[in-house]
Length: 313
Image (tube, rainbow, N blue to C red; front, side, top):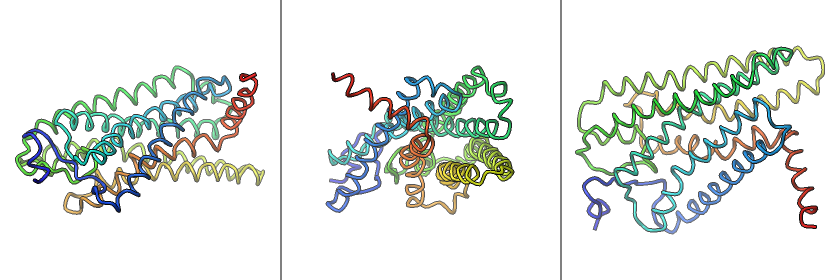
């Protein structure tokens, strides 16, 4: 019996990244490891930031929100993939699919805005160090973080309501590993051209504009770094900026390519491959790139390790 025949009329079928064949066991094991690693390292980073007074700064405050978003992002998708693989089922309920869409869009939009806020923080810290305290006040940081969550949520409410409102009269098999808007739209049997224009507008607001601002910020940062006379300081700054930009490109690049390229150029295989970057890989890499290469974070970890033997005594 086919999977479609085993579902209710409102259930969807996630075709996934891999099948239930023996060869997919390697991918399944890797996925489990990545999920555990991502949740652990992001949770550890949040605890470090809130527990160590030296990390109570605007940069780490924003980073703690990024880590929380990353935990939610990967937890919204991977556990369902694992459960379906273990059970041999590929179904997801209409409500479950709607929940995945809602959470995914909240976090995608919120993280776009949050990364832009973090780049502004680095821009001010490097280009205007004497005015940093005034330009990056605690109040502004709270507003930036709250704004990222609020605007991302409002955007998600609109898109989720629209997508779930469309009738799905074709096959309910989603050629993806989670309920993502572009994959869902392919199942609709009504004209969605007006809604796709709305998706394009959202993509410009949440992807293109923030990415452009981040790029400009790092160009200005590099210009300032080049004026530093110390070659060692230049090397350190270049290293930090290059790693940060690599993560930004890994997040924004696939997202822009997924949501902004013409419909005729989209293929299910490409969409699934690109989605792994901003849903699985960047949440894993963000804590490493943004923090665990940082001496303040490493010192905080070292202090915890030193206190462990004392606590046991």
